Structures are given as structure tokens and as C-alpha cells.
Image (cartoon, rainbow, N blue to C red; front, top):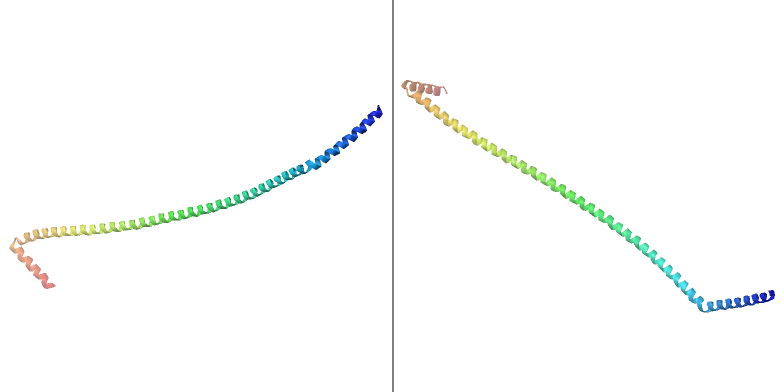
Length: 166
């Protein structure tokens, strides 16, 4: 039995080796190239996908850098516009203050001129009233003085005496 077992084992080993070799030959003849081609295609697809991902990453970095540059430019432009707006506002405020000062000075001068002309008019009116009152008083005094003949003569003599001295 041991011999039978040994022959069986040897025969089985031979047939298994022959079938394995035949299987390897068939695989090499018919399946090996398509399997290698599929593996190479898969490897090439993975390589292309990695290259595309790397290109996309570089493009994304470029886009990010461009967007940051545009953002910086936009911020700088905004700051320049705000600065210009502040300068315009300050100029408008300064011009308005200056104009208000000019208008105020003009109004003060007009008010002073009006006050001065009204003062002159009031002084002239007072002078006219004083002159009128003085004439009225002088008229009454002269009437009183001239009502008496002696007083008239004395007044004429006094006036003539004053004229001779001058």
C-alpha cells in the first residue's frame, strides 16, 4: 500500500505539475498580455489622474494667488477712493466754513453800516429838533426882550458894541 500510495503521489504530482505548466502556458499565451495591458492601462489612468490633480492643484494655486492679488488691488482702490472722498469732504467743509465766514463778515459790515447810517440819521434828527427848539426858545426870548422899547435899544447897542470890538 505504501507503494501504491507512493505511485499515486508520484502520478498525482506529475499530473498536477503538468496541469500547472499547461495552465501557466495558457495564461501566458492568452491572458498574460491582456492582464498586463489592463494593469498598464490602469497604471496609466492613475498616473494621468494624478497629473490632472497636480495640474488642478497648480491652477487652483494660481487662481488663489490671482484672487488675492485682485482682492489687494480692490482694497487699495477702495482706500484711495475713501481717502479722496475724505479730502473732498474736508475741502467742502472748509469751503463752506470760509463762505460762512465771508457771509458773516459781510452781514456784520452791513449791520455796522446800517447802524452807522441810522445813528447819523438819529443825530441829524436830534440836531434838527435841537435847532428847532433853540429857534423856538430864541424866538420867545427875543419876543420877550423886544416887547419893551428900552430892552430893544439896549440889545442893539450891545450888538453894535460887540461888532466894533471884533
